[in-house]
Image 1: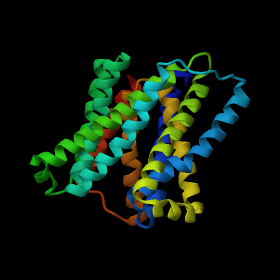
Image 2: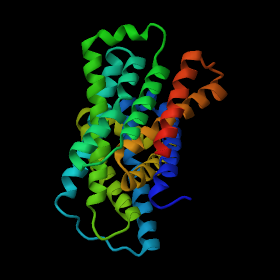
Image 3: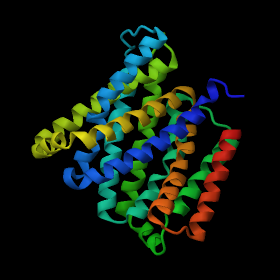
Image 4: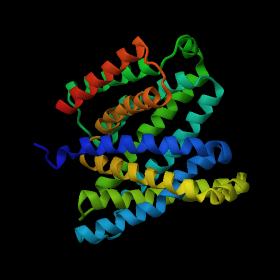
Length: 299
């Protein structure tokens, strides 16, 4: 029987699907806008939709928001800034060396999220769940590897940047969860929606100021491509809404581990849309992901 607490499972699946769709939409915008311009779309055009989501939630729930406690703001800024830093380090690592190897390092995020969640929020994980996180992570790393790609693992610079980027994304998940559970006197849906609005606002301001300083023409290009950007922004806000709902209900490590099924969705898109064959190594990695996720959900 599905309980309120277990809703994090379908919420995470929906969020992962939405993220795959958003990534596909952003990919077509990277060439005309550049990496940071395309990245800002998810914040700049996602923010108005997050406000709309919050308005609908307040109308339906009847909740009344008040000024959150002081502890809310450090958590919010940790989540917002860490996500931006993680994105920047990820892009630097991928430009510096191997996309595949960097991706493999990034998938240590679930394990690092478990560590940070325990240290900073006291999120408790059973040994069975820890085992599930490790199994699923190993599966993703195996799936991400390509023949010859393992040679780059010995190089220090991409290794450090990839692992630190994963740490930043892990801190982002923990920071947003910390902010959500700090919102008092409202439902978890309202707390999640409220945190999302303020998080996207902070990220929009930071990246927009950065682009005004370093690449003002990119902002003009973004406005010129507002139609496709609007759809990508909607999907970004939609996915984030469900990520935050999941963070409100369970440990961030559970969410980020189940989110590894995004790899399965991406493999499916590659196979059916682009006719890319699946190798035995990828099949083995996918099996490990499925086992890890199944253990996590059943634990």
